[in-house]
Image (tube, rainbow, N blue to C red; front, side, top):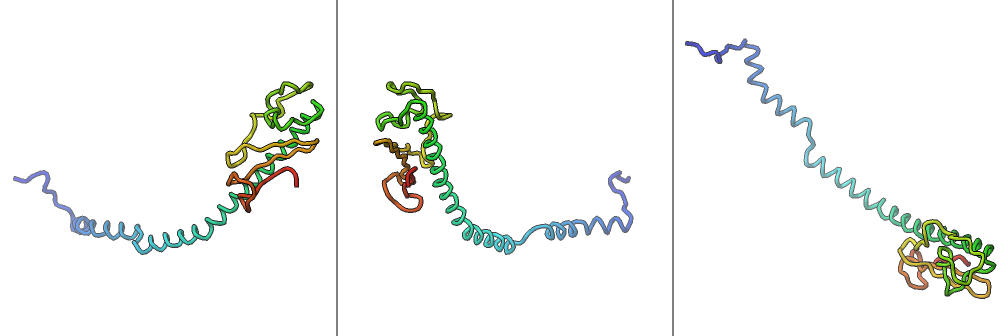
Length: 160
């Protein structure tokens, strides 16, 4: 009695069935990468990151200083608008808060003079404001939050 599963394959099909596993293995091996190739690519990427990374981070730091300078210029312009409406700059006690909330002694206040409230500097510190004798100073203490410093830690102000 013959089983329906005992099919006879032609000679060519039998040869292909026996050699199929070998061709699949060599074909799969040809598609992948060797460990050496992966390590070489990883080493090249590490070198690139080591060379380019510090330059990108320095540019990012410089962008924060420029952002602070732009914000200080905007605050200076808002203070000029305050002065046009009220006739004076806010006192040191009133501070920059006078640009968003009306001070008690500010007749003619037509604010708020800033959209979105009072900004902080790019490092999260409040801007410092002083007014004396018609001269105003807006100051950011830089990344370290302390007076003085160099680079990113340097003070940024509206007056030279």
